Image (tube, rainbow, N blue to C red; front, top):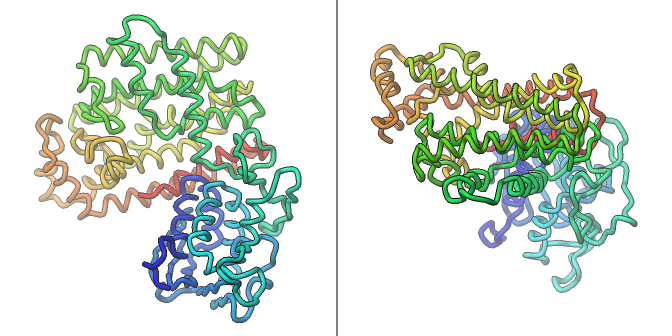
Length: 550
């Protein structure tokens, strides 16, 4: 059967599975990638499709092509595919003659088996993956045999895909939890988020260790947006103020800040609901910053729609930004009723510090543009980026969430700083890269907008540090032009120079290294937090930075 015969081939199933885990459970991919390391894995499926699987930092990369010079090669037949997600069989029971053919050194083969064991144990419970694999099975049931090496049953007979059928049938009260061996330690396999009938919130599941990050962010984003709508006044002037204040928050992003805030609260034993008001305040601050930031940068689009000042004029836009910041302050103060004086004072302190850092970072960047300065070192960018976006995007949400749980000790709150400083810088570099090479629909701003605005990104700093002397006058002339005097051709000229000098590749590698350092610091500095579902979500977000597709 050829690859084009099926809507979903084995190779495409692998690629779709990895893509889903990139968004939903990046920590799982990171664990598998750590086992795979430098091994090139060639996979041949029973529908005549092929795939190459490799690891890059904390990512797994899938190419739907036949692998050249693989370190390990695996050939699946019907029975082997049938057992792929069966968690109750050991390796020796799965690798049988005339069923699953594996070639490679003993060390590499065991590393591959460990990687796939981690994937199956920790990812099989995600509802989205169950649905994906069920679709694959159901589109062509004649491909699947029984759980034994006997002849394949007729296509009309029930398909016995042991593990997936088990997950579909199971109910929480009668589901045994088989022990799993991870890194030599016997642990309890995490309970799936879906029991075959209903999905529940990650904070309500006592045994979950790998939450579905995409679903978690969706829930936290929705609950926070609901709180924002409740906080916004329902009175005049609607058309010129309060309706406009609803505009930017309604253009919802990924939900990173609300999720960090709520998860940090849960990680320290607090009730997730206690952090929702603070998460709403953070989003109000953020959107107020965005309105003013778009004015300063002369941006034309935000999250796929015209910016506030482009659509409604400068005067109304400035006032709307002021209104969002004022409402954010009021939201922080209103925690006094539910969280008490000490925690509310802690929230005020954290919010003021966050705003000060952001304003200082904005001043640094605007100063570089105003005075036609391109920093010589990446460290200058790191400082600016941490101040402008790192604090309110990564560090402060964690600290504020912990305060909501009753943590006010500066030494404990400071445990978040270095890990999420590094993760925040990596995240910002990736956003800068996506502005150059990403799809507008995914990134949310006009393509090459950063080049039109003259933002001092890592790529631009690297370009001006490495370009030839004869290139400098022309590129500097393009860069120093005002936004209104730049054209798309000018931006493309700068992009072309970056591509010639491999500035984008440099920035991608730098972001990977910073994210890896951040994850290492996360595990080291946050050992004080016991393993629980809140900490697991924080870990997923930390790994999300390393697994984002660029």
